[in-house]
Image (cartoon, rainbow, N blue to C red):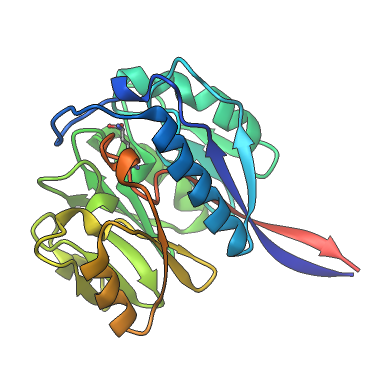
Length: 264
Ligand code: CIR
């Protein structure tokens, strides 16, 4: 018998109420939930094609933002921390996610008055960079530190401006390589990482999902995609323009859980 690493991607269906989603930096425009659901299903197919096993959390049709599962938890190899989302309308999203995650990880919980969205947490090695955004506050950063110091994680608060979450401004796209919008975050505070800047006319393009040696990336940002490819990265384009109207990107539609499945 030997261990065989496997990535489980937790996702959740697009709610028919998506058009009533939270919006912070975008003006509200009509959103077609059927088109968003088609985008979402193409996204799930892309994750499967990269070897992930997609596990869907029970749908929550009355919770407009439920598709954005990333915000409900911080999944590490040793533990999963269930968040307390910054938007009160999103707090009812967490129990169903916790129920599924509990099969893979010991769970811990962020408690009031702390609030944090998973989209604000960027893990690079054993450092968790946490965006100080409109969703994530100082008590949450302190609680994360308390919860995670037994595993020697470093928790570092990072200022962000002009965008919703830290991972709207910066994500990791390869070994030692970050993709960022330098107008939204100071990119010098992440250690000795190389930084690819988004194309000036694609400010929202810094949110990319690294999976299985590839970068799952919105097809509506072609100029930044070319920059990634020129850096030698494999880009897997996915349509997500409809979900982008709800201020969502590619990291926020899944929670990645590394598991070991025994094979003989
Ligand atoms: C919200 O404002 O909470 C949702 N409309 C969008 C959340 C996107 N989440 C993410 O990027 N992690």
